[in-house]
Amino acid sequence: MKRLIGTHARAVRAPIISQGDDLQKIVVDSILDAAKSDGFELKDRDIIGITESLLARAQGNYLEITEIAQETRTLFPDHFVVLFPILSRNRFSHILKGLAMSGRNITVMLSYPSDEVGNHLMDPDAMYAANLNPHKDVLSRQEFRRLFGHEFKHPFTGLDYIDLYMDLAVDNNIEVVLANDPLSALEFSKDVLVATIHNRNHMKNLLLANGGNRIIALDEMATKPGRSGGYNPEYGLLGSNLAGKSRLKLFPRDAQQFCDGIQKILFEKTGKTVEVLVYGDGAFKDPVGKIWELADPVVSPGFTNGLRGTPNEIKMKYIADNELAGLSQEEAQRQLKQMITQKGNNLLGQNASLGTTPRQLTDLLGTLCDLLSGSGDKGTPIIHIQGYFDNYASA
Image (cartoon, rainbow, N blue to C red; front, side):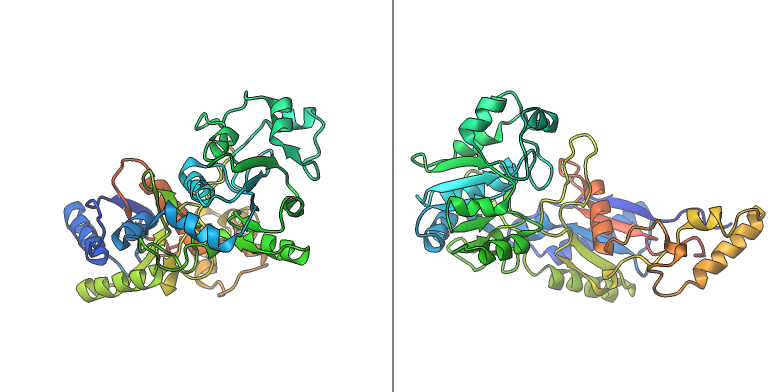
């Protein structure tokens, strides 16, 4: 009987992970136990995804916010601007709390009508009705309240983020302004903490080229072990999450070595070469709330070599509508399979790939993993994917 199933994925339950646990062994045991329980076998080029929070927890990669305060006093001798942070209790409120505990005066410059990942401060229609030019107008907090009051709340959390961030001040050392031109930050201070996630390097270069003095980004803080031991040499505070009243869980370290280790152990136990990735946020946008999910600096901070690059696929719909048009179903299937098996190693720019989206494999797979595991109480932080590299011509 011909094969009818292509790619399929399983969400695998795992025990509660604690600091110091041998996570490689736990992941391997969980996968092998699931295979035995559910009646499947590992195959070459299967994919195992592990959520980043498990690795960070096993590493004990936590940071006390008092350490943020201490580092801030070292980095900024006086008043500074926090440029374009996202609106988030989980992602940024504790960082700002630590910054405020430094005792430095802080101007928090928020972008509008929404932040970098789509969290809105105001209704865009109301913004234009107020005759605001988002490309150049800088609003004080008082001007914002005069125009929009307190009526607009975040549609998912019900929060007013300006109030939330103002309430984190120590001795009234936080002020909030709204702007979209990053150079306007330099009108408040020549010292700037760039809080954007995905365009931070561009922002830093722009500010430095236009008279900025101390220009630091979030990925340059918490890069070395401090008192609590938590740090990330590559991403610093980016990718962190609230982990209690006074600490953050940082993005995991050494994810590459972790993935390579699991691949090695599974090969020794099964003789199969599987691919492994650590994943965080998926790269997708909510069509209702308009929020882009990716608040982590990358979808996958570590993955095995077989997951590098982008898919090399022909677009079946395009081929079916053009080159296979008018053929019998049997002949169309035969020719399509032949085209797939004979496709080159790089279809970039060719009509056969027209309409395929050239995204990184790890972004696609990490998004699949994130959607499947969820962020609530499913208890399935390990994902097993099978048949992802198969195609219509696979036996």
